[in-house]
Length: 301
Image: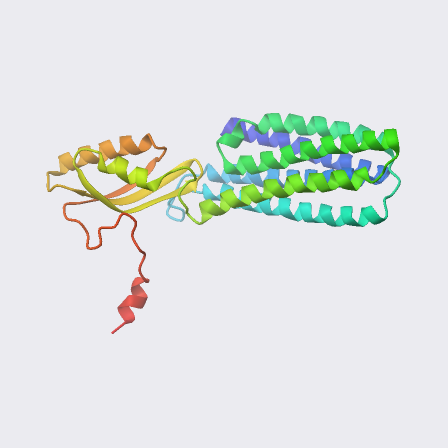
């Protein structure tokens, strides 16, 4: 955690410095591609700052106000970051559309110099965050910001070279549209992953029928029903279920729970809440249908 915090802090500092350089360079060179990249770098700085805040908050232990801890703060930040990517892409598309009709004169020397600095900075940030993206959707969203901006800087360099060699200024808004498209796709992916966690959907790639079969194959388990599996974060998977076992001493039931825990850990599920029963419930379905709130049903005659 400490190492990831240091990496995020360095990435934030690099991003803020790069934003100032690209903003000034874009204004001096009149390049929409460079200004678009500067806007994305600004979003990077905001995303990295939010990610740093979420990382510190997520490290707080669970308490009476947040019994699962504060891990979901990172998911909320990822959702915000993904949304900002979509907004930035829309702004780039709008400005590029306008410049197709009135392309300004591009100063290629300033454009190429600032874009090269931006590319180097984004490569440095991407390397800093590369490993952390596998451990946190929060870090992944920030890494996608940085990666998209690195591709943007590469596109800006390409547009500068084309304008320098051919004088064809329409390449500037064309490259901007390409940058916007990459940003838009990255934003949609982050929003989809964050939304799945917030809706408490089962993790992608985890077959719940397979989970139920794995649990029922444990010696001593007669049936599994009312099964719920959800992600607290993409890396922290929780499971709750009713498990029917034979009427037996408590010590024997504890051994069944230990075997279930070991079996489910192999499937990547780390947090379990199991209700052991010696009689099946009325419905006995693997996946239960949630009924109306108790208050509403109690009010009925």
